[in-house]
Length: 295
Image 1: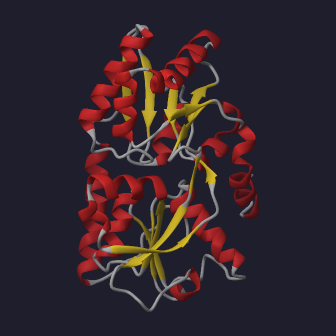
Image 2 (image 1 turned 120 degrees about the vertical axis):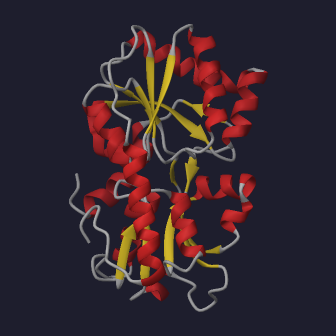
Protein backbone atom coordinates (compact mmCIF):
# COMPACT_ATOMS: atom_id res chain seq x y z
CA UNK A 1 0.00 0.00 0.00
CA UNK A 2 1.34 3.45 -0.88
CA UNK A 3 1.56 6.18 1.73
CA UNK A 4 -1.71 8.06 2.04
CA UNK A 5 -3.75 5.69 -0.12
CA UNK A 6 -7.31 5.00 0.93
CA UNK A 7 -9.18 1.95 -0.34
CA UNK A 8 -12.65 2.33 -1.77
CA UNK A 9 -15.22 0.68 0.47
CA UNK A 10 -18.97 0.42 0.23
CA UNK A 11 -21.68 0.80 2.84
CA UNK A 12 -21.04 2.23 6.28
CA UNK A 13 -17.25 2.01 6.03
CA UNK A 14 -17.23 4.16 2.88
CA UNK A 15 -19.37 6.80 4.58
CA UNK A 16 -17.08 6.76 7.60
CA UNK A 17 -13.98 7.12 5.41
CA UNK A 18 -15.63 10.04 3.64
CA UNK A 19 -16.16 11.71 7.01
CA UNK A 20 -12.48 11.17 7.82
CA UNK A 21 -11.45 12.76 4.52
CA UNK A 22 -13.75 15.76 5.05
CA UNK A 23 -12.47 16.15 8.59
CA UNK A 24 -8.86 16.09 7.44
CA UNK A 25 -9.61 18.69 4.75
CA UNK A 26 -11.43 21.10 7.04
CA UNK A 27 -8.85 20.61 9.80
CA UNK A 28 -6.19 21.88 7.45
CA UNK A 29 -8.10 25.03 6.47
CA UNK A 30 -6.88 28.27 7.96
CA UNK A 31 -3.69 26.72 9.26
CA UNK A 32 -1.17 28.60 7.19
CA UNK A 33 1.77 29.57 9.36
CA UNK A 34 2.82 33.15 8.82
CA UNK A 35 5.58 35.16 10.40
CA UNK A 36 5.67 34.90 14.17
CA UNK A 37 5.77 37.96 16.38
CA UNK A 38 9.38 38.82 17.22
CA UNK A 39 10.67 36.65 20.04
CA UNK A 40 7.80 34.13 19.87
CA UNK A 41 8.74 30.51 20.51
CA UNK A 42 6.85 28.15 18.22
CA UNK A 43 6.22 24.62 19.42
CA UNK A 44 4.78 22.06 17.01
CA UNK A 45 2.32 19.45 18.23
CA UNK A 46 1.49 16.28 16.29
CA UNK A 47 -1.22 13.63 16.80
CA UNK A 48 1.07 12.10 19.45
CA UNK A 49 -0.80 14.61 21.61
CA UNK A 50 -4.56 14.47 22.08
CA UNK A 51 -5.46 17.53 20.05
CA UNK A 52 -8.89 18.03 21.59
CA UNK A 53 -7.51 19.06 25.00
CA UNK A 54 -7.52 22.76 24.21
CA UNK A 55 -7.75 24.05 27.79
CA UNK A 56 -4.73 21.95 28.73
CA UNK A 57 -2.72 23.40 25.84
CA UNK A 58 -3.71 26.93 26.88
CA UNK A 59 -2.60 26.32 30.47
CA UNK A 60 0.66 24.68 29.36
CA UNK A 61 1.35 27.60 27.04
CA UNK A 62 0.80 30.06 29.88
CA UNK A 63 3.15 28.05 32.11
CA UNK A 64 5.92 28.00 29.50
CA UNK A 65 5.53 31.72 28.82
CA UNK A 66 5.85 32.53 32.51
CA UNK A 67 8.93 30.35 32.91
CA UNK A 68 10.66 31.46 29.71
CA UNK A 69 9.62 35.11 29.89
CA UNK A 70 8.76 34.94 26.18
CA UNK A 71 5.63 34.48 24.06
CA UNK A 72 4.92 30.83 23.19
CA UNK A 73 2.70 29.55 20.39
CA UNK A 74 1.58 25.95 20.00
CA UNK A 75 1.21 25.01 16.33
CA UNK A 76 -1.08 21.98 16.04
CA UNK A 77 -1.27 19.73 13.02
CA UNK A 78 -3.35 16.63 12.35
CA UNK A 79 -0.75 14.78 10.29
CA UNK A 80 2.85 14.05 11.18
CA UNK A 81 4.02 15.09 7.72
CA UNK A 82 2.68 18.62 8.19
CA UNK A 83 4.75 19.16 11.34
CA UNK A 84 7.79 17.70 9.59
CA UNK A 85 7.28 20.11 6.69
CA UNK A 86 7.09 23.08 9.06
CA UNK A 87 10.40 22.02 10.58
CA UNK A 88 11.93 21.76 7.10
CA UNK A 89 10.67 25.29 6.36
CA UNK A 90 12.17 26.59 9.61
CA UNK A 91 8.76 27.66 10.93
CA UNK A 92 9.05 25.78 14.24
CA UNK A 93 11.59 26.11 17.02
CA UNK A 94 10.57 22.99 18.92
CA UNK A 95 8.21 20.09 18.31
CA UNK A 96 6.79 17.10 20.17
CA UNK A 97 7.37 14.44 17.53
CA UNK A 98 6.65 10.79 17.05
CA UNK A 99 9.86 8.76 17.27
CA UNK A 100 9.57 7.76 13.59
CA UNK A 101 9.69 11.36 12.23
CA UNK A 102 12.42 12.18 14.76
CA UNK A 103 14.67 9.52 13.25
CA UNK A 104 13.54 10.39 9.72
CA UNK A 105 14.49 14.08 10.12
CA UNK A 106 18.04 13.13 11.12
CA UNK A 107 20.27 16.17 11.74
CA UNK A 108 17.52 18.72 11.10
CA UNK A 109 16.50 18.33 14.75
CA UNK A 110 18.25 17.82 18.09
CA UNK A 111 16.89 15.74 20.95
CA UNK A 112 15.67 18.13 23.65
CA UNK A 113 13.94 15.93 26.25
CA UNK A 114 12.19 12.58 26.48
CA UNK A 115 8.89 12.35 28.40
CA UNK A 116 8.47 9.86 31.23
CA UNK A 117 5.47 7.57 30.79
CA UNK A 118 4.55 5.65 33.95
CA UNK A 119 7.96 6.52 35.33
CA UNK A 120 9.92 5.34 32.28
CA UNK A 121 10.85 6.91 28.90
CA UNK A 122 9.17 4.18 26.88
CA UNK A 123 5.90 3.20 25.22
CA UNK A 124 4.56 0.45 22.95
CA UNK A 125 2.46 -0.26 19.90
CA UNK A 126 -0.83 -1.96 20.80
CA UNK A 127 -2.59 -4.27 18.37
CA UNK A 128 -6.37 -3.99 18.67
CA UNK A 129 -9.48 -5.89 17.62
CA UNK A 130 -13.12 -5.32 18.52
CA UNK A 131 -14.04 -6.04 22.13
CA UNK A 132 -16.49 -8.75 21.06
CA UNK A 133 -14.02 -10.38 18.66
CA UNK A 134 -12.75 -13.55 20.36
CA UNK A 135 -11.64 -15.23 17.15
CA UNK A 136 -8.59 -13.03 16.51
CA UNK A 137 -5.88 -13.08 19.15
CA UNK A 138 -2.67 -12.25 17.28
CA UNK A 139 -1.38 -10.44 14.21
CA UNK A 140 -1.37 -13.74 12.32
CA UNK A 141 -5.12 -13.99 12.89
CA UNK A 142 -5.65 -10.67 11.08
CA UNK A 143 -4.29 -11.93 7.75
CA UNK A 144 -6.75 -11.18 4.96
CA UNK A 145 -8.69 -8.68 7.04
CA UNK A 146 -9.25 -4.93 6.98
CA UNK A 147 -6.70 -2.93 8.98
CA UNK A 148 -6.66 0.69 10.17
CA UNK A 149 -3.32 2.51 10.36
CA UNK A 150 -2.93 5.82 12.18
CA UNK A 151 -0.54 7.78 9.97
CA UNK A 152 2.18 6.84 7.46
CA UNK A 153 4.80 8.51 9.69
CA UNK A 154 3.61 6.92 12.94
CA UNK A 155 5.84 4.28 14.51
CA UNK A 156 3.25 2.56 16.69
CA UNK A 157 0.41 3.14 14.22
CA UNK A 158 2.20 2.14 11.02
CA UNK A 159 5.91 1.20 11.11
CA UNK A 160 5.82 -1.21 14.07
CA UNK A 161 2.79 -3.26 12.92
CA UNK A 162 4.25 -3.56 9.42
CA UNK A 163 7.56 -4.71 10.90
CA UNK A 164 5.64 -7.25 13.00
CA UNK A 165 4.21 -8.70 9.77
CA UNK A 166 7.74 -8.99 8.36
CA UNK A 167 8.70 -10.94 11.49
CA UNK A 168 5.96 -13.40 10.58
CA UNK A 169 7.67 -13.92 7.23
CA UNK A 170 4.86 -12.17 5.34
CA UNK A 171 4.72 -9.15 3.04
CA UNK A 172 3.05 -6.15 4.76
CA UNK A 173 1.82 -4.92 1.36
CA UNK A 174 -0.26 -8.03 0.72
CA UNK A 175 -0.95 -9.33 4.24
CA UNK A 176 -4.27 -7.50 4.66
CA UNK A 177 -7.19 -7.50 2.25
CA UNK A 178 -7.57 -3.74 2.66
CA UNK A 179 -5.95 -0.98 4.70
CA UNK A 180 -6.54 2.72 5.25
CA UNK A 181 -5.30 5.63 7.36
CA UNK A 182 -7.49 7.29 9.97
CA UNK A 183 -4.94 10.09 10.64
CA UNK A 184 -5.18 9.72 14.42
CA UNK A 185 -4.73 7.01 17.01
CA UNK A 186 -8.09 7.78 18.56
CA UNK A 187 -9.81 7.24 15.22
CA UNK A 188 -8.07 3.88 14.83
CA UNK A 189 -9.69 2.86 18.11
CA UNK A 190 -13.04 4.13 16.88
CA UNK A 191 -12.68 2.30 13.56
CA UNK A 192 -12.01 -1.00 15.31
CA UNK A 193 -14.73 -0.41 17.91
CA UNK A 194 -17.36 0.34 15.25
CA UNK A 195 -16.40 -2.63 13.09
CA UNK A 196 -15.02 -0.51 10.24
CA UNK A 197 -11.72 -2.38 10.59
CA UNK A 198 -10.94 -5.88 11.83
CA UNK A 199 -7.81 -4.61 13.54
CA UNK A 200 -5.65 -1.56 14.11
CA UNK A 201 -2.48 -0.45 15.86
CA UNK A 202 -2.15 2.48 18.26
CA UNK A 203 0.18 4.32 20.61
CA UNK A 204 -0.02 2.91 24.15
CA UNK A 205 0.22 6.44 25.61
CA UNK A 206 -2.85 7.57 23.69
CA UNK A 207 -4.70 4.40 24.68
CA UNK A 208 -3.80 4.77 28.38
CA UNK A 209 -4.73 8.46 28.37
CA UNK A 210 -8.08 7.82 26.71
CA UNK A 211 -8.81 5.05 29.20
CA UNK A 212 -8.50 7.69 31.92
CA UNK A 213 -10.28 10.62 30.32
CA UNK A 214 -12.63 8.94 27.79
CA UNK A 215 -13.14 5.26 28.71
CA UNK A 216 -16.18 5.21 26.43
CA UNK A 217 -13.77 5.46 23.47
CA UNK A 218 -11.64 2.45 24.43
CA UNK A 219 -14.34 0.12 25.71
CA UNK A 220 -15.23 -1.08 22.20
CA UNK A 221 -11.76 -2.50 21.50
CA UNK A 222 -9.38 -4.93 23.18
CA UNK A 223 -5.60 -5.40 23.07
CA UNK A 224 -4.35 -8.66 21.57
CA UNK A 225 -0.62 -7.89 21.23
CA UNK A 226 1.89 -5.47 22.73
CA UNK A 227 5.08 -4.60 20.90
CA UNK A 228 8.53 -4.37 22.47
CA UNK A 229 9.21 -1.04 24.17
CA UNK A 230 10.31 1.95 22.11
CA UNK A 231 11.75 5.21 23.36
CA UNK A 232 8.91 7.64 24.01
CA UNK A 233 8.06 10.29 21.37
CA UNK A 234 10.58 13.05 22.06
CA UNK A 235 10.60 16.80 22.23
CA UNK A 236 13.05 18.01 19.60
CA UNK A 237 14.61 21.35 18.75
CA UNK A 238 15.25 22.66 15.27
CA UNK A 239 19.00 22.72 14.64
CA UNK A 240 18.85 26.51 14.18
CA UNK A 241 17.69 27.09 17.78
CA UNK A 242 20.50 28.90 19.63
CA UNK A 243 22.23 26.96 22.41
CA UNK A 244 21.01 29.39 25.07
CA UNK A 245 17.35 28.94 24.02
CA UNK A 246 17.81 25.17 23.78
CA UNK A 247 19.12 25.03 27.34
CA UNK A 248 16.39 27.31 28.69
CA UNK A 249 13.58 25.24 27.20
CA UNK A 250 15.21 22.00 28.32
CA UNK A 251 15.57 23.34 31.87
CA UNK A 252 11.93 24.49 32.00
CA UNK A 253 10.54 21.15 30.78
CA UNK A 254 12.72 19.09 33.12
CA UNK A 255 11.81 21.43 35.98
CA UNK A 256 8.06 20.87 35.58
CA UNK A 257 8.19 18.01 38.07
CA UNK A 258 9.78 20.30 40.65
CA UNK A 259 6.98 22.83 41.16
CA UNK A 260 3.30 22.48 41.94
CA UNK A 261 1.95 24.10 38.77
CA UNK A 262 4.23 21.96 36.64
CA UNK A 263 3.21 18.76 38.43
CA UNK A 264 -0.47 19.57 37.92
CA UNK A 265 0.13 20.02 34.19
CA UNK A 266 2.08 16.77 34.01
CA UNK A 267 -0.81 14.94 35.66
CA UNK A 268 -3.18 16.35 33.06
CA UNK A 269 -0.72 15.35 30.32
CA UNK A 270 -0.64 11.84 31.82
CA UNK A 271 3.15 12.14 32.12
CA UNK A 272 5.55 11.94 35.05
CA UNK A 273 8.14 14.41 33.79
CA UNK A 274 10.91 14.90 31.25
CA UNK A 275 14.51 13.74 31.16
CA UNK A 276 17.58 14.37 29.02
CA UNK A 277 17.76 11.44 26.63
CA UNK A 278 20.21 10.04 24.11
CA UNK A 279 19.63 9.72 20.38
CA UNK A 280 20.72 6.07 20.61
CA UNK A 281 17.48 5.37 22.49
CA UNK A 282 15.78 5.45 19.07
CA UNK A 283 18.05 2.87 17.42
CA UNK A 284 15.30 0.23 17.46
CA UNK A 285 13.10 2.52 15.37
CA UNK A 286 16.00 3.17 12.99
CA UNK A 287 16.44 -0.61 12.65
CA UNK A 288 12.82 -1.04 11.57
CA UNK A 289 13.09 1.84 9.13
CA UNK A 290 16.25 0.31 7.65
CA UNK A 291 14.38 -2.96 7.09
CA UNK A 292 12.06 -1.05 4.76
CA UNK A 293 14.92 0.82 3.08
CA UNK A 294 13.95 4.17 4.59
CA UNK A 295 17.37 5.13 5.99
